[in-house]
Each structure stands twice: as C-alpha cells, then as structure tokens.
Image 1 (tube, rainbow, N blue to C red):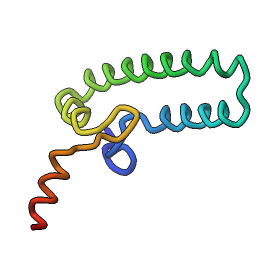
Image 2 (cartoon, helix red, strand yellow; image 1 turned 135 degrees about the vertical axis):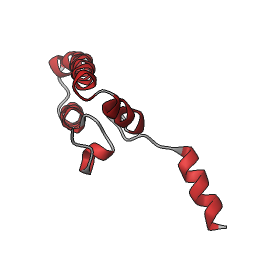
Image 3 (spheres, helix red, strand yellow; image 1 turned 60 degrees about the vertical axis):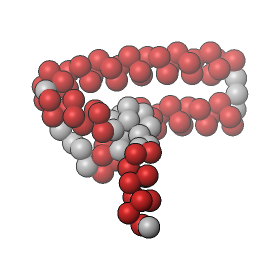
Image 4 (tube, one colour; image 1 turned 180 degrees about the vertical axis):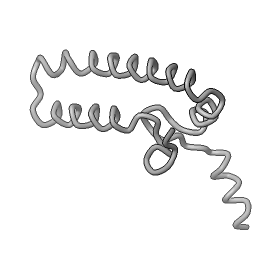
Length: 91
C-alpha cells in the first residue's frame, strides 16, 4: 500500500488527473459528445474507485481505513482543525 508522495494527499490521483484533462478538453473544445460523456465518466470513475477501495479494505484492513480517513478520494482534504492549531502555536 503506497501512502507517500501524491498518495499521501489523494487516494486516486490517476483518476483525478484523467478527469481534469478531460475537463480541460471541454473548456478548449466543447462538443456535444464531450459534454454528454464527461458526467458519465465521472460516475464511472467514482464507482470504479469505490470498488477498488473495497478491495483495498479486504486486503489491508484497518491500515487502509485509517489512510482513507486521512486522505481525500479525488481532492486533498483540508483540515481546518490542523490550521487553527498551527495558528495558535504561532502566537
């Protein structure tokens, strides 16, 4: 189980990258097929990611559950609690 590098922030960076690239294609060259297919791609990749996560839980158990709580699925988690604690220690 890899939890370092980009995987320390996002659980599915490859899917995030693909969805961002295809979203960029829509902004650059919007066509009806792209506009129809993009929401379908989002749903398909979300379901695939959920399936893979269930497999990871079966393989790695509590270690993966802990990792999943710390990281975002497609975007990094922003912890306001951590930011507040860092601000308080600076004063």
